[in-house]
Picture 1: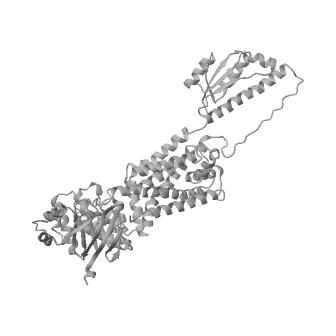
Picture 2: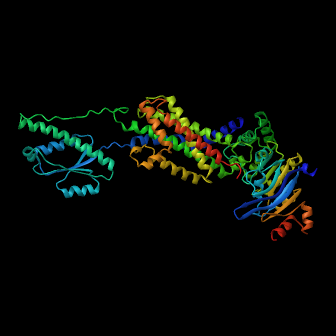
Picture 3: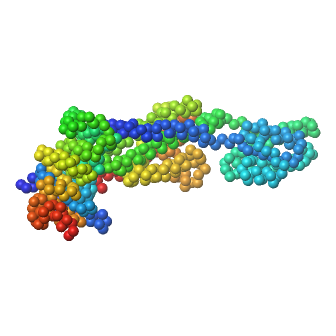
Length: 243
Length: 374
């Protein structure tokens, strides 16, 4: 059935902070292996919604299943099956590349042998041989992002959540980063990505656009452009965001 | 268990990699121990002593000579008048004033009685009390000698005055060495401060740099994470105790009468209390700055109400009840009991059981209040 294929199912999910409704009864599904773009202006509620899905923020009401587990009741099971990369690329600056990989591999419960394998493979793939023992703090932003993304995939999660992963880097690095995303997607990982770069939205299989806590549009980029009679996703976004 | 190992490993790496933190952890406390143990003394010494001698007799000079001979007093001035003496007191150049009236010697010989005026700067009440005792002691011994002299001169047939004297014997700190008393206490402060501040700021720091969120997204158990975080500081606390004990033995020659094993056993439980408090603080704060302020707030109260500087018995009743919640109080007591008195396990059971209870409550609260999901 369709249900089997949906790795994220969200129904009427709501988060209130006092009187303020940050996320207002959003409903959507994400299919297995999909690259799902989660768009919205700053303050539209993207990050809040994502935090509920990754189990670090309790919803006020509604329902959400991620990787087959309820985020309300089985948040810790959800966490075993997802990877997460935040806007801050939360690696430890005072640990080396290798040490960061070992640490995160370790707390996800990978065996020492597995960590070693993964670590070597990752370093080779990213061409990090020379800087594997450098402290992460000394690396340029673009490197940190790539490493953070690879670390988020270390335990082979079903879904990886990326919160504005390409903030503050040049177009070439962004392009390289998206190649990594495609690769992970081809290998069967579902990608849930927030961004406010509209060119990146074009790379997604499907996009949702959030305005003031509500999902105002959800479809493939192509269909959205048709629906809003726009040339690019940028125009779609502007039309929606301006109301 | 394996995950725990990874966290501990990571924490130790970060601590020893932080070049500015290491000296703070190990060098600063030791400098503090060396400085404070020498400076924080309540011995009243070098009292600035001045006198006004209106009598100018051999007896008055003999009395002044007694003060010159005392190691407690520095005779700073001989004032010609009360007015000048009072001005000096006002300026703070003299703390104790002795006024010998005219006809002092004559009155003593004729009437066998005379009064002396003593004025003491009592802004520091405790010191003034001690100074008063010293002055009284000197005058009394002078008085006794005088009586014998006078008796020999005048009335041989009179009965010798019977004197009752006490012979004090000071236990546990025979030489009344203030450092023996203070060093164990200061050691307590250092172990407490370092472990409280380090643990209080550690998790908040991860909040600030955003790595805590990353940790919260992993399936790690709260207890694993917290134990992994606190274990390194527990080790550091015990290492500090070790270095401190070595210094107090080598530099200050403070005796270690009791059992070292008992000392370490108690300390290992005590540090858990402090770490629990630190963690609790860091759960309720968002920045290291906030955590630091709150940690200081508790630290100051804990120190001043610990019985380290002022005896708890002289505090008002309500304050005495409050000190029951002060972990430093128990540590100071145990440290002094074990180090100086050689108290055994049974003697420290009251402190030990309260500390253990405190550790369980604080760490329970800390783990409970640490939320992976908000």
